[in-house]
Image (cartoon, rainbow, N blue to C red; front, side, top):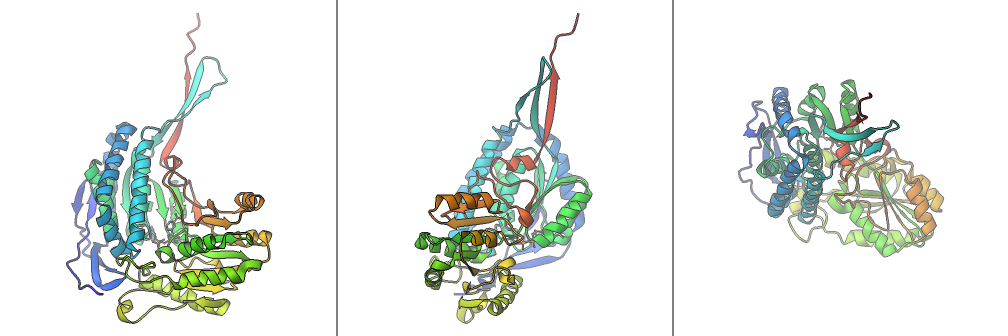
Length: 493
Ligand code: NAD
C-alpha cells in the first residue's frame, strides 16, 4: 500500500516561547522510510545566528527559572506527562511515519517518555543535598544542588521522542534553561515534544529548539561560551569531536554513544527464553537501538540447537510498514543507513556463514522503503569486523565459544560497553558475569534492550563519558554541588 504525498508540515524553530520560521531559506525534506512517496515534513537548516538567538533567549530566561522552587518546576513536567498521555496515539503515529519503527514500538517509546516525565517531575521534590558532620565544634556543613545555566542538548534520530525528553526533563527540573538541537531526520517528533513542554507551562525561553545540521547548529552550541553544558547522544565519531570541543571551553559534557551488546548463552540456559530475547533484541526497531543485541556468544555444546531455534524464530518475522499491526520489523531510517548495513552484509558474507537474510527486500511495496531482511550470521570470529563494529541494523552475529571464561572474554572484547545479558541458572556464573562484564547496564535472563525511567542508563568504555542519564543520578549532570560551612559558635566574651 502506498500513499500519495499530502501537504507536509513546515517545521519551525521554537525560540523564546514562539514558533518562528528560519531565515536561512534552506530546507531538508523528510520522507517516510517505509513509504518514500510520503513527505512527512520539511525542516529548515537554520543558521548560526538563529542558534545564538535561542541561546540568548535561554540566558535571559535563566534567572527567573532558577529562582522558581524545584517542586514548582516539577509540576510543569507532571503536566507535560499528562498532555503526552492524551496525545499518545497521535504522537506514536508521527514517530512511526517519521522514524520508521513499528507503531507498537512507537507506543512503547512514548510510554517510556511519559514515565520519564512522571519520575523526573517528582525529582523536583527530592533535589536535596546532604548534611555532613563538621570536625569543628558548633559548625555544620551541608551541600546544595544548583543549576548550571544554559544547557545544549544534541540528540539522535533513533529515539526521537524519548531522548529529547530524557535530557530536557532533568535539565529543566534542576533549574537550567535548554536549547535542543534534534536530529535532522526527526524534526517533527522533536517539535511535538517541545510543544508539549510549552503547553504544560514552560515559560518563554526556558526550552528552545533550533533545527538544522549538526555541523552548524550543533557546532554553534559547542562554540558559544554562554552554553555551560552539552548533553549529547549519537555516534562515536561525532561524540569524540563534541567531547574535545567542549573541553576547550571547559563545558561540562556527557556523551552517550554506540554499542555492540552481547547476550551470553550458557549450556544450561532456558533456550526458548533466550531465543525470544535475542530475536527481540537483535531485530526490534530494525536493530537501530544503541542497546540492540548484535552479538550472541553461545557455548559450543548447545550452539547447533540454539542457532536452529534462532533461525526458525527469525523466519517468522514480518518485515514492512510499521503502521501495519502485523509487522514486526520496520525499515531502516534512510538511504545512508541502508547503504551502511548493506556494506556490512557483504563484509559478513566473507567473514562468516550466512544462515538467514543478508539482502535488501525489494519488489512490490518494498521498493518504496529501506527494508532489509533480518540477518543471522553463524561461526562469526570474535575479532571480525561484523563482531566488532556497530552496524545499527537487523544483523545478528553468533559467536561460538568453548566455555564460560571464553564467553566472558569475547563479550568484553569490543571497544563499546553499553548493555549485556546472560542466560543461565548457574548462580556462581551469574554473579561472576555481573562483576566482570564491562557494560554500564547488564541483564540476567532478560533482553539487552530493557530500561526503566528510574534506573540509570548509559555505558562505559567508548560508549559513554560523563555522568549517567535517567534515574536519580541524571540530576547530577545538570547541577553543580555547592558545599556550605556554617559556624554558629556564640561570640567569645
Ligand atoms: P550522529 O552522531 O550522526 O548524530 C547525533 C546528533 O549529533 C544529531 O543531532 C546530529 O545533527 C548532531 N551532530 C552531527 N555532527 C555534529 C557536529 N559536528 N557538532 C555537533 N553536533 C553534531 O548519530 P545518529 O546517527 O543520529 O544516531 C545513531 C547513534 O546514536 C548510534 O551510534 C547509536 O548507538 C547512538 N545512540 C546511543 C544511545 C546511548 O544512550 N548510548 C542512545 C541512542 C543512540
